[in-house]
Length: 202
Image (tube, rainbow, N blue to C red; front, side, top):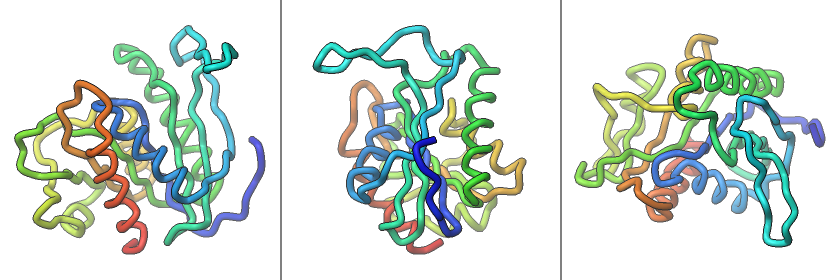
């Protein structure tokens, strides 16, 4: 851990890799706009066995990164990553999400927002919402935002929220509609704008 900030009732916002890189790109926008500072890095043997090489030829291991900011409507802890565990390693996903929630709870997080992509460009909506309870799901619906019904949210974007619910932590998943074939900056910006507004309403 790089530092231990004094956060007041912070919200954990997770933007991980996935469909259209929407979650990760949304997290990048939040980090940049809020001038978030690096809080901690999580390394694990559950992540893939390669290194990432930067433009100067310097290597580093893939990791999960936690940032924090006190410059938004609420204090936030932002979680992002280079990659998630392999899709068929179910235990790895549970372990990584549990470790992330442990760390967030240690810093007082009692609300979780996950951000990701919704691979259905013909849906007629910009965003879809899933939540830990019915009233929370309905709270943010409008002409551009629908409730995600009868489906699944794959990987950490869904699992973080599911495990948070078991811990008695409320939360929502905000999914930007995308074709999912390449980085979708438009969908990420829609998610970023929505989450920025959502923080002022919690």
